[in-house]
Length: 456
Ligand code: ASP
Figure 1: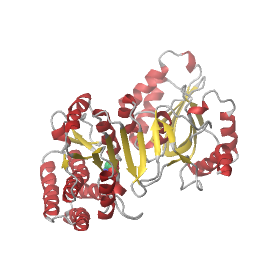
Figure 2 (figure 1 turned 180 degrees about the vertical axis):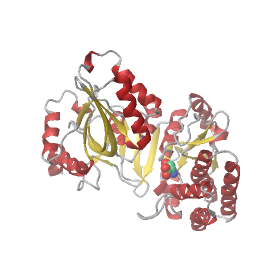
Figure 3 (figure 1 turned 90 degrees about the vertical axis):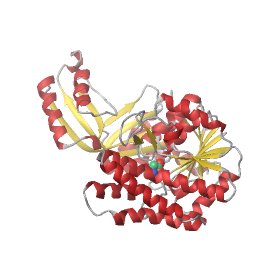
Figure 4 (figure 1 turned 135 degrees about the vertical axis):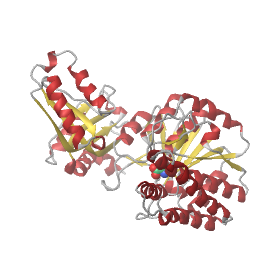
């Protein structure tokens, strides 16, 4: 049994949805189809999820919203017409959006945002199931509430709970193809909550783990994962096989092909993931597995992400002070801030944080508290950093790799503000100023892949 997830561009138009149907029809083991909301049809297009967020914001701000609602409906109408479906489904979608707004207005703004965002995948799944049936693919739309996809109560960032896997397992006995909307679940109390953005990947993974699928196929719009961002590096080499750990590191830092949270459920059961292209389903794609067979080269990929901040703290003899790190992290915990890395020296420590978690007020409070409670010599925030990550299982025990990377970076003129290598040695991260990000990726690619590229 395979679970297939189709991303936004794969279900953006009637033409794309027909490709999805052909893919599902061509393989009888494709029994579970998870769908995103309609995504971009061309590069300047707006995803339905983003239209829904605009709609929610208009409602929250008490502005006129009918135009925005109709924009969403128009996307479904175009698809329904192109698929030859009865237009009653479009009316149902308009009614559904109004009902969600009415219901949520009595509850909370965050619920309104979640329920409207989720409607993107929910209504799309209904439409796609209807289309499948109209062309003879026996299928059934399943609502995550009915199926028991239980999540915790975290608006916009929900996580599946253990009972979800038990409940969803029952779906495996269905004789019809299941069409399941991605991106959301329900709390035990029955409140809808969405996953993080891009979270339909997570739904696919939960479903694959629940039914113990043989394979999780993740259909998108690229032939495979590349060793570096093709927008930054010219014609980067293709990755046909990658380990879970490598993929986790790469998707954490800027590889948007597969959500990093989507790996955990499949890793536990060792279910392989195959990233494939809806527009070119014959291409082998990229397989994410627990152990890679071929590819002896040390580095598999290079990625980067921006908008990091550094909290810098220094105090002489910090290394002798018991509990210093804990007290510092406790202050961050009380401000509800998670950290990414904590490189440290003898008398100083830096905490790397994603900037979106900070506000000027929070920064002020943190600086004041660190001064007064930890009696430090200096403490301040710095912003505008990127983390550039070099990833590869083959890096382990490979001498001189950090030196090669650092030399390549130095050629760009950038100062390395931080270096971090986890003990698993799957990745080497460099904190640098944002403005050097692209140059560094190019320099590192040249260093580690030029020979490979030349041999192609
Ligand atoms: N539609 C949602 C988003 O745009 C989820 C997804 O497509 O995976 O974030």
